[in-house]
Image (cartoon, rainbow, N blue to C red; front, side, top):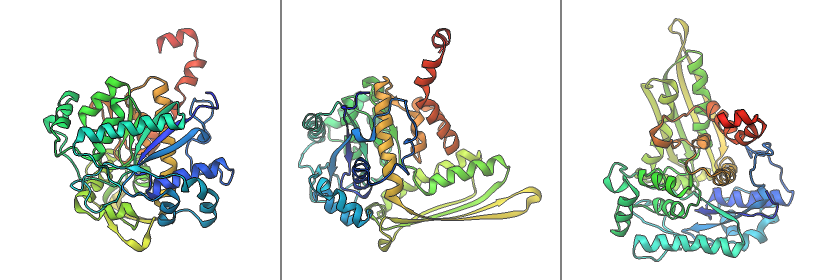
Length: 408
């Protein structure tokens, strides 16, 4: 890949804690102020991923403050780090965002898109993407949704079944089409890769999954796997493999950032709980009778999330045992590198000509999407093996004999 190529990363929620951390982090990396620790694919060489320095960021937000002020408000970066990149962040200001208070009640911004119809909102999003690409001189663009969690939507509704039905629902200003769907549709209809790092309903609408296959847009999601569920999907396979029966698993989270504030709304919280709770039974192969997951907004904690787990298991001779885990983590420090890697891998998928759900990227999500109704793999070790096999596919193909390539 030519070193001059530039990949645009259009972020929904550019002024949020995760996005500002990602933008600042890549700028600090360019300047040699930080190393690549925390970036999962930094050591993967020669597989066609764009360089970290090729990434150019833009995007939408409900708050109009520039990224320097936003980063100061989120208080994730150290003062030294922030001062080093403040001139760059100061020049970056989000574009007005699509918003619907019926889908996310607790977050009310000042920079919402003034559009009267869903079609107008979609046209405005697509125009933003075109302008971003032209003004920044970008070869390609990917979109990542980092906006606050929306309430759930019934995906069995007929208007969500096919692209044609979804188009009619857009024209009718259907009340069940939320902002996350609008962003996903705007990207997919133009063949732009899209990742949903939130629990909101976006590209997982059946109609949009079909549309992605038609337009060749690679898609992945949903709900980023960064902290508690990451560890849960590492520990659970080990308990299963050692035949230790899980009697109960109690998980609780406290966090005080804007994500926590959004999740203080019961409808948004339930959507998040649903994505976090799906993995355990799938990995173990049975329903855990007492699996409890709680999320509490606790403002003083800010971005420093605490995840606490109590695991009750029984082993040989029915003897009970316990595991207790307390993960004091920094939410955005865990999430921001995954946003960067999702942008790079989705771009690779598009350059390979792969459209629709890229299930090899399931390791990044609590509730991975699967193509054509196939079973979802939740165990992190297996997901990681699938990702590395997918990344190395071209290298393996180049190393194969002509006869082996024909059989492949």
